[in-house]
Amino acid sequence: MTTNIIITLCLLILISYVFDLTSSKTRIPSVILLLLIGWSMRQASSYLSIDIPDLSEILPVIGTIGLILIVLEGAMDLELDKSKKKFISKSIIMALFPMIILGAGFALIVHIVFEISFKIALLNAIPLCVISSAIAIPSAQSLNKTNRELITYESSLSDIFGVIIFNFIALNNEFGWATFGNFFLEIIITLIISLLGIFGLSLLLHSIKHRVKFVPIIMLMILLYAVTKIIHLPGLIFIMLFGMFLSNMDLIRPIKWAKYFHIDSLKKESVKFKEIVGEGSFLIRTLFFLIFGFMIETSDLINLNSLPWALAIITGIFTIRFLFLKLLKIQDVTFLFIAPRGLITILLFLSIAQNDKIDFINISLITQVVILSALVMMFGLIINKKPMPINSDLINTNQHKHEESGNGSTQ
Image (spheres, rainbow, N blue to C red):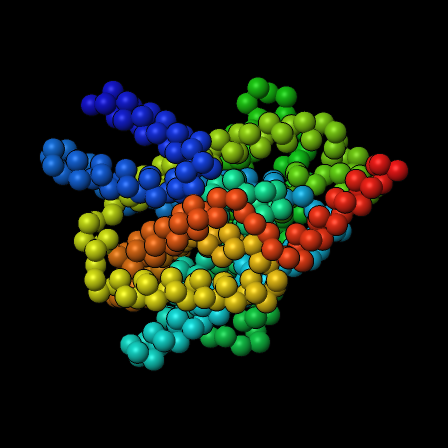
């Protein structure tokens, strides 16, 4: 039995790797194929009367570790400089405001139709409004660097904003000046902890000479995230800031105390660290979607009661996204389709207390929204195999800078 499990796991992970390699060519998100394999395994195990233990308890654990690694990996791809101020501001707007508008709108409809308190309705709506970086970032690998960075910024920030807003709603019964004051105090405390954590982990990354050094650092990051979660602080901020620090160390060179970071040595170690994080996030992401696919009931996929709501949510997601892309003058049509729901949506849904759950916002609705959003992204990427930037301020700015640098080198 043990040998069979090992063989099965190895084959599934290798198949996932093939999906990852070919997704840039086929434009089919690997998550669709992983969910399909997981679901097929469930049907096969039922048909063959193979007893599989309950995996529902392990899913949130794997998902949380995956979220940390995926946000860290995405943040380590983000390079900062003064020319990207407009770029970053657009990412923040795209990550935050569509989420708030969609969440508030959906919650208001639920509040009116089902006579449920607006707070409970909003708590259940937020998971459906968060872009999944676990799906968006790998799917954006086939795009050019500018577009890929924008997707990475937007989806990573969406994860962070989504978790912060969700926790803020879940942990507060009343919303007044004192509540918002405590919230901003928590953000400040998190930033202070993040700065101390970045300094400490950077020293460890440079100082540890033992052959095993990256796994302890990753475990410390997960531990720090778990501790901040227990005391209701947004720990994902720390994860993202640490990743961005490692990818932008040259920016602190002019500062006097930068010598304590041993930047040149740290840059070499960060390259290896990024490789380990990338491989770890791939493995955890694969296991998460395989297990979630295995847990999907066929009745969840074809639930006609939740399907109209799922289609309405998908319509709302892409309508609001279209309006914001127009507002920000980002006219590359590929961006419109890359707004998948996935790992973070499932994690937040599973974290809702039983007393706060709404009957019709159930696993069927979540599953349908995740699959439909991934299918929209898949068809969008297939239709637009060669991304065509059209007059985007963001892209024009970068092109203008490249032309100037090219002219300077010619002269």
